[in-house]
Amino acid sequence: MNSIVIGSTKHILFALFYAALGIVLALIISVVWLLNSRPELSLWHTVKFKNEYNQQLGLRSFTEYLDLEAKLFKELDKKVYQKYRADIASPINRYERQSLSDPALWPTDWNRSFEWPNPDAEFGLLLLHGMSDSPYSLSHIAQHYQHQAHILGLRLPGHGTIPAGLNDITWPDLAGAVTLATAHLKSQLKDKPLYVVGFSTGAALALNHELEALSINKATSYDKMIFMSPAAGLTPMAQGAYWQSMLGRLLGQEKLYWNSIETEYDPFKYMSFAVNAGDVVYQLTLRNKLLMSQITQEQRNKLPPMLTFQSVIDSTVSSLAVVENLYQYLDGEQHELVMFDFNRTQSHRLLLNDDPLTQFEPFWANDLLDYRLTLVESVDMQNTGVQARELGIGDKQAPLSLATSWPEGVFSLSHIAIPFPIEDTLYGPIRQDNLDTVQIGLAIYQAERGLFSMSASNMLRQKWNPFYPYMLDRMDGFMTQSQD
Image (cartoon, rainbow, N blue to C red; front, side, top):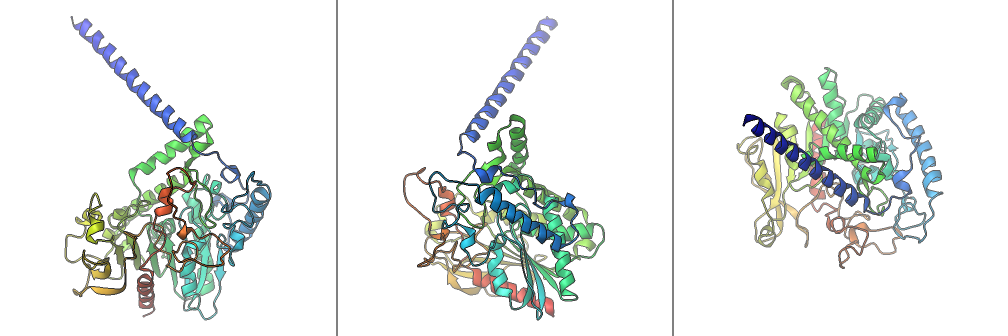
C-alpha cells in the first residue's frame, strides 16, 4: 500500500513539475514573441563605437577624456550620420541632418561635455545629467550660474551619441568619468568651494563618489550637493532587466536588449531605452544603499550638505527611496528636502487611486525631523494656488504662499520635469514662432491610438517645472549659506 502511495505521489510531483516547466516555457516564448514584434531596430540601435570611455582605458586626466570624446563624435558622424539613408525623409529624426531634431541646429551642442572657465568664479559647479539624457538637461542651471561659477557639464559615457551606447556601459564606467571631471575641476578651483548638481542617475553618481571616499576614510570632494529627482532606489521589477538582457544574448535576439524601441525625435535624449541602462542604475542604487548602511554615523556626518528636489509622483525612480535610503540617515538642518505634491483641487483628487503621500507617513510621523523638509502643495482643494510648508527642523513657520499656481491641465510634476523652466524652447509649452527646431513640449495630438510613433505616455508626460523659479531661489540660498 505504501509503495502505491509513494508511486502515486511521485507521478503527481512529476506531473506538477512538467506542468510548471511548460507554463514557464510558454511564458518565456510569449514574452520573446511580444518583444520581437516591436519595431525593427535601426542603425543607432546596433552600431558600436571604439572611442567610448570605459574604466579599463586607464585615462589619467579629464583632458584625455575630452580628447577621446572628440574622436567619439567623429566616429558618430562617420558611422551614423554619413551612413544612414532613409527611404522616406523624416522631419523629426535626430540622425537625419537638417531635420527639426538635428542637434547641429542648436547654437550649442549640448550632447557634449562643456567647460565654462571663469577667472572671477566664487565657486565651481559640476553638472551631472541622468541616464539616457545629455548635458542639455542641466543647461538652464549652467546658464543661471555662469557669471558666478566655473562650470563643467559632463557628458557621461554612452550618452549624447546613439542609444546603443548604453548597451555596454557599467556604473563604474560612469563613476570613473565623474572622478576625472571632479579632480579636474578641483585642480582649477584651487581653494574655492566645489558644488555638484546631479539629476537622476547623475545624483546617484555624485552621492556614490562621496560614499566611496567615506567608506575608506578619505576626504569628500564636494562642499554642497544639489539633487533633482535622484535615483535613490528603483522598483524590484528593475531586477528583470538583467535577465531579459541575458535571455537576448542566449537566443541571439537583439530586440531583447531593449526596454523600449522608439522614434528618436529628441535631439538631446534617447527615446529608446536599453535594458542594460536600467540594470546599471539599479546596481548603482544597490551599491549606494549598501554603503550608506555600512558606514558609521560619524562618517555620515561628514557627507556634504544636501538639497534635494523630488516629486511625490515619479514613475522612473522611487520617491519613497529618497527618504528611506537617503534622508533617514542624515542628521542636521544643513540637509534639505523639497517635495512637490500633486495638484489637489477637488476635481483632480477624486481621479486618483491612492494618495501618494500616505507612503511617507511612517517617516514623517514626528513633528521634528533630522533634516529640513518642505512640502510644495496646493493651498486648498478649492483653487490652484500653491504654498511651501515647512515640516522639518526648526521653528514652526507659517506656510509661504508662492507667486505661482498649478497651470491649467497640469496635475503633477514628473521625473523629467524638474530641471526645465516654462521658457525651455524644447520641452516648454510656449510656442516659438519661426523656430527651425522641434518643440516637443507642444507635441500633443489627439487621434486614434497607434497612429503616431510617439507614444501617448510620452506625449502627455509633464516636461517642465512650473515651480522652477522657487527651486532656483532655494538653490541660491543654499549656495550662499556655504559661503558663510
